[in-house]
Length: 298
Image (cartoon, one colour):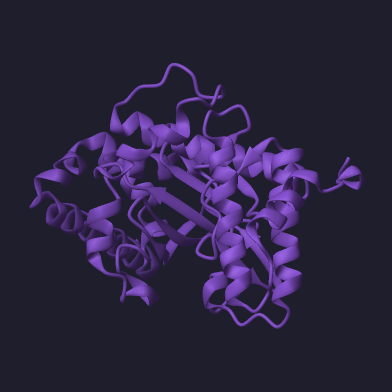
């Protein structure tokens, strides 16, 4: 056996020891005891390199370990494993957005950077989801179990993105979904994700407002959908254009509260417009959404 072979064995032994040490450390918490099981240990060894960013290794050592503890339970890791083996995801690097319902991470794939939205499965914030899901004929036979609701919610966001994208509306392109994990287009540059509209410097707010009213009109009239939480928190500002995100709560027109949600969305847009010096009344903006001629969108 030559020196290169010995080095290879030493590297392999070192990596195995590192993996065992990491799993042993996790096992000190009951919630991670499952990782000692052979089938999960083998699965984890196959994706560990891709998760180095969120494990706090390598160039992303600053990542808070609590993020891992909060987000990456057994079923989530299994979903990531599935998406990696399907070729939709190579690495998960660092969090770019954090919320009560989900964390969004920067990731990479063969086609470049991606955004990976991981919905939490162990908290109670989804108790209000039913008002956005019940009444939507696309999701029948609903279970009220928290985990099932989360999976339905993620599929709902994926399908809403597809529906809006079909009509040429600026939303992140959805790439893949599995259980509580959604992979989609990353909106940002090499340095940082795109800022939210509320934090951006906009030179021509009237042009932006006109687009957002057209977005809402097209979603309502053509895509048969209302965002249901459209505000400057859920709009990114990228390369001089508005990109709408967080469409999971969007409902179809037949939903019993769709009109109520539409009025709320337009009210939020009018509030943003007024704050940016645009004189527009809610009634006028709502009329534009309902009566806008969109024949060219056919």
